[in-house]
Image: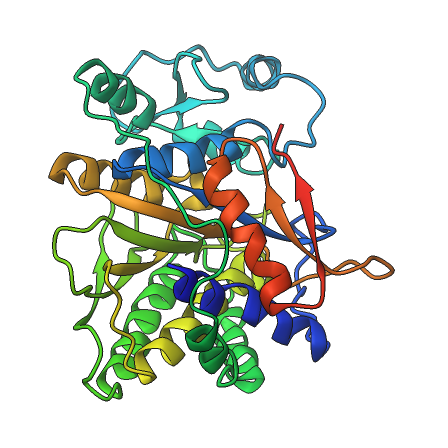
Length: 374
């Protein structure tokens, strides 16, 4: 797991910082003061994504003053819209905070919601909170994963670090930002996913064949853009999966469906971190004990849609996960601030977070920062 985490994360971040890459090319997301890790774990896949989802639902980037219920009431008052039925054609259901009842809204209202900056969870198709509660009631949730006290594979990790390519990062990011938008309901968003899957298959085909078996697939959803999943098979078929992820979609909150949204930092940086790690690990003939999956989610900006759908499908299939690390906005450092590796510390697993923090001084010369979603 250490080899995966650091080939994917800190080493790539080090390349960004030391060589002065500034991937921030859009104005639709707030400027982070640090790069952010979001470590999650569970022995049940749903828990992994459930915690990830709640970190966003809990107003991680909510800069709007009035409560969302007030905003919705004001919108309906101004448009003369009545409260929709609980369900029906074209209706969506959203949850603004943990434990709150889902609120039915029309698609037009959701389009307006995407312009506000409110953070929410679209639970129309996949209500993970309900699934989680059901699994707890059945005794199917086990959150007992343990992690090492520090790095144990430094020789292997450093060998991968030495092969990481700045030009690959730049080229991959240039490809992602060239789409007018990677909005999850757009044809260009779908193209971004399909093109990425084709690139990953090309990378996999160039692997020496000495590592774990490699597969790449797209995961279709109820909206236009698919998610992308690449997998390196482990030597132990019964061991829990290790997952690393980023969201591939982008959004222009002023004009969601067609506005220019290069999404360079949010979340092009996390995406290219994963691409380069996948490229170098497969080229090195990486053969993990635990199977490793790389996830590029669609629909994050529409209420965590892609990750929710995948999480629910994994829960239904009984798949287990040892650890999950989510990379979001990992490449930008605000001018005048000190670069750090930033960790989100709420709605995450403290033991996995503690382990990943020990890897920073082992491989980098920068420090650690912390932040909370709230």
